[in-house]
Length: 481
Image 1 (tube, rainbow, N blue to C red):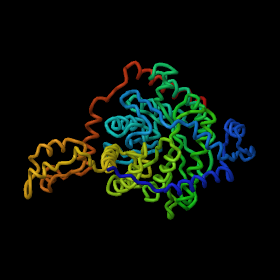
Image 2: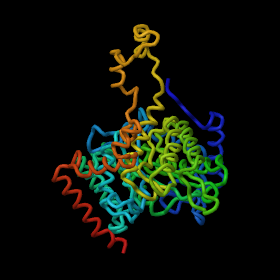
Image 3: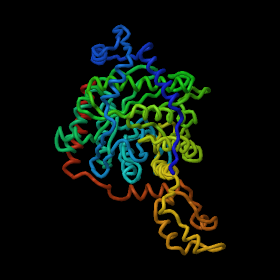
């Protein structure tokens, strides 16, 4: 029997859906983009052109949900790593908002650089349940205007898994498409393979960003899958009520689905969120709070109601360093989502409210992911697991270790192995150097970085990707100048 959790009942899902529709119809959403406003007005939305606010009727939401595909495949340059959505079990992504790194060599917190993305991609390649890579940092040593293109190129070079990022300005789009063409072998092949997807963040409350909207609308012509990703925080950019903050986030997500389905009917959409709450003393955004986990899980209930693949923020912490708080908060913000059968959780490897990358934390989070999956899988009560004959053979006061079934069972996935955890006796732990989980993770990071790149690109393909990156670094700053 598998464990399943949910936050909202069917009645409560409908109530929040109606709340969201009321927001869309009566409050409206700001679209600071003429193309978007014209599309919306043409299809039946009431538009105030002076305020750039569109009032979206329920009929438009229903139509957009009908045209959004309910299943699709996110391609990877290594076809064995393709991701079919919905997924049979929860898989993991990173989060792209980081600006700092806990330096692997010194342990010091510093500004991130491009090499940190390359290193994180190599670690990501080795984690079993990690299948979608959003480069987790904005590197300090790359021109801002070319940052998205360069991040994506370095990601393609260092991991063979699916790549996701943001497009913040329209001028990035041709370079990203060109990379996909190189990897897939042509434009139509690139469209079919869907090697690249984007996160689209709304601006709470109830706004779209002009530049990101323009860029994502342009990319939508390429049919790249889009993760819609509202981020209101209770008490600041969202109302101080979990119910209403969920309704607000859902309204922003629905407004995004509507505009992208209008622009490119049938474009793949992932339903997601990265909500939080506010620290009432400092005003800072909190990711590791229990209320954050409740909101994320409630949003997964809504995503399932709409029949869309779900990718929610999770595996989160507000801790400033590796340790007990980080692990506690990450489990708290992972397990409920896994039990709610979210398709993708994104946030592994980051601490400090997703602002700081740690390579060691990536591996620790991979272990958390494995343990949460095992909890979700529950207890197998099939006939194959009926070991009555062993009980009869051993009898009262006996021992099962010598039974053939025992030896076989411990080689199956019914019993987990957590290699970063120490499960030795105290004396053995002391003799082995008193190593903790962080020590074991650090040793594994070193081993991965000291080895050859796993699943490398062909030399000529890597050369072409690097040439596209270099061209973007040369030309994009000029375009923005």
